[in-house]
Length: 199
Ligand SMILES: *[C@@H]1O[C@H](CO)[C@@H](O)[C@H](O)[C@H]1NC(C)=O
Image (cartoon, rainbow, N blue to C red; front, side):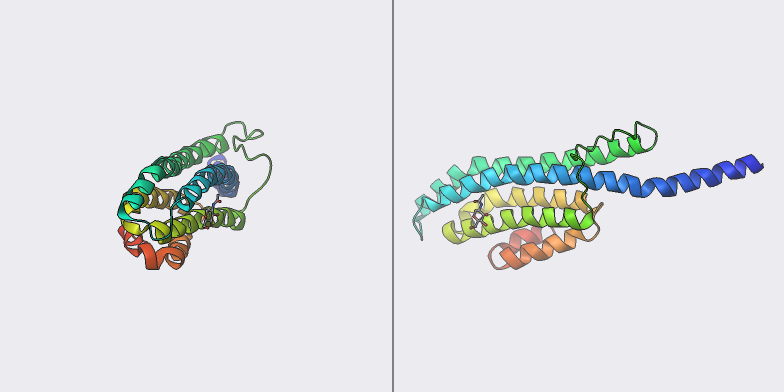
């Protein structure tokens, strides 16, 4: 009886102790994932900027549609990268938890390179990603008009919303924060798309 009580107390204490370790490792692996994602996104936003810059201000309808066609591969790449990051993050969350519950805890699979990243640090990384995407979209919409870009921007925003929803489980309040940022940057230009995903 006493052993039983001791055991359940120990199990309770162990699980209370384990929670912050799991959270910490998640933040680290997610930080690395976000760094990689932002680096990849930057390659494509650089292409998008260069593509848009090659068109005159107030482009004709034909030029707008031509630009959209040239921008599509870069948009698709960003949308795919956001989706891939979302599913990797979901898998890592699960895997890290299994390891923390009895795997080899001396060698966490964080891939974090030893650098620790807390919630504030993770939030900053997410803001950098959001600013990169949002300001590029703003530039493109002002330059080319929303109409030709709508079929490209909509899936990207849906994918971004999926990623932020997944991360909101780790950094509570992130969905609201990012929604606020996107509205501040794009609200006047693409508020309808943001509304579509509940932002
Ligand atoms: C693309 O242009 C936007 C708007 O000027 C800018 O915020 C963004 O950093 C640029 N991206 C790259 C990779 O040059």
